[in-house]
Amino acid sequence: MKDDVRVFKKKILWKTAFFPGVLTIIWAVSLFIISDGVLKEERQKEIVCIVGTILFFLTAYSFSLKKIIKYFDEIGAGINQLLEEENDKIQLEPELESIEKKMNRLKITLEQRTKDAIRTEQRKNDLVGYLAHDIRTPLTSIVGYLELLNDMKQMERTQQEKYLRITYDKAKRLEKLINELFDISKLNMQTVALKKEQVNLTFMLYQMADEFYPMLEQKGQSMKMEIDEKILIYGEADKLARVFGNILKNAIAYGDAGSEITVQAAKGVENVVVTFVNRGAEIPKHQLEHIFEKFYRSDSARSTDTGNAGLGLAIAKEIVTLHGGEIWAVSNKEDTKFIVKLPILCHCDFGSEDV
Image (tube, rainbow, N blue to C red; front, side, top):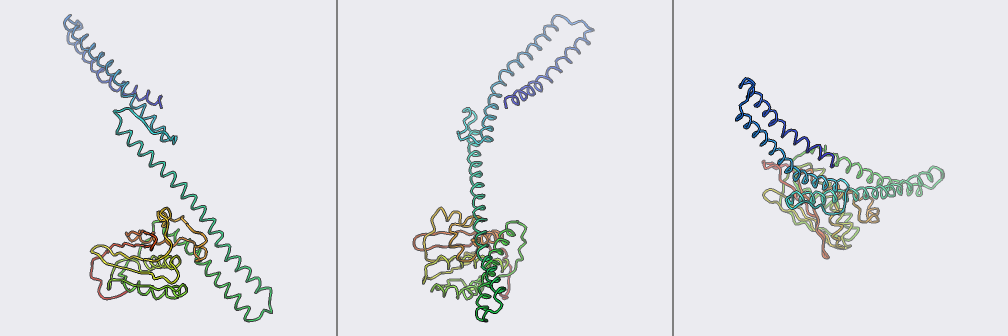
């Protein structure tokens, strides 16, 4: 870095001295020619005075430049600290206080990005491990039951049906795991084009409540709907249904048995806010901050029991983001809320057709 600064200093001195020097020589030669090669004493003194002034200026400028070069030295040392990821705080001359603050902010930002990258990589590795286990479990069962069916030719009909049913269930679970992986990869490519259309959100949410009735019954849960009449938005119906379906699955899975899940939807001037409320264990704050991240999996055992890859909320966030919306969660000892905020992207007259 010091060698680079010396080269920089020489370049400044050269560029600074070159033009005044050339002009002085041209001026002196011109005077000499005009005076027929003979310079009078007064003219000689004048030239000597001007040349001396220029030389004095350049000498003084060179000393002044040393102070400026010192600033560059300090900035260069600070950049080295950033590149070498040193833990010490960057300190510069008082005159460079503003630059010092910006460099320290940059240092903190780079350190945070490095930590985030390491954490994300670790989560990705953990997820690969979880998925390897999750995929291997149903696959092993499928292979095992198919081998039994193949080896035992004289198996009773009822036994065959039982094994086939188990094999089918395991195959469907495996399909769900693979589909979630495919979906999160596809959505993360940032090239997904939404097929937007009129969506009757009120109708969609009531329809989903009916579809999830069997899951609610299994845990003795119920669903309460607090939805404005005929909320119309503009988006891709299938993907939005995926968002609300993933959130509902999460609410049912983690909600207390026998509890009530509340679905609220209210339309504002520019946005629609949909809220899912379930009673259950509080989600710790450190988990709540990462719950929508792609490779975050707070409870592998629960996710395995539900038969999916634990990517439902990450997929929901990707879809909501594609629609220009927001999704977040809040949790306390009483309940957990998942809130989806979607913009009303089209203010045209939708008519009466429902989706």
